[in-house]
Image (tube, rainbow, N blue to C red; front, top):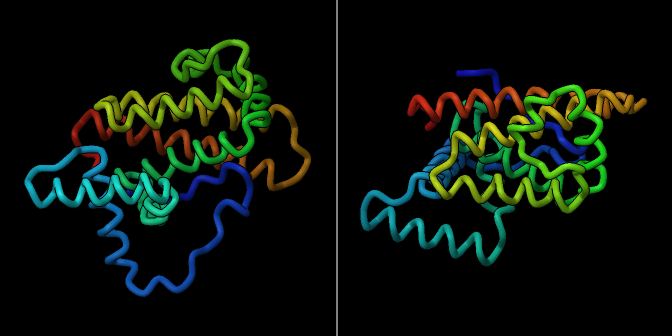
Length: 199
């Protein structure tokens, strides 16, 4: 199993430690099952009933509650990949101006990734929000490997852009590095998905 790394996108406040989990194994199993049902769909009537409950929960409370189940998942798992997509989308929606600024700064250094990411040029706040929304929608439209590749390209460009802008504080440097790590994890997950090994 690959080393577990949580992506650090918008600084340490986005990743506070969750304390008091009574059964981390049960939590991990539940997270993996929910991720599987959301992406792969139901295999039988029991799965279908669970899927309906999960989707109703997501509709009522948003993905925040579900994403908490994925937060501690290994990077090379389906739940871990979904966590990284969720965090990337959450950050872009919270700060689309900064995301657009960093993407614009990074695209000059990663032209191939810019094409894969598919952001409209010039990349304004609305364009980067549209991209991350399209990426997340791809999870449920049987384009998971492509979705993960697009998210990886986006994360890599933003990480490079953050570094290129020369944010002076150490948090900016660390988060830029973690974004590049997140990109590598998402790209690895895409390869595993194509091989049928992303579980």
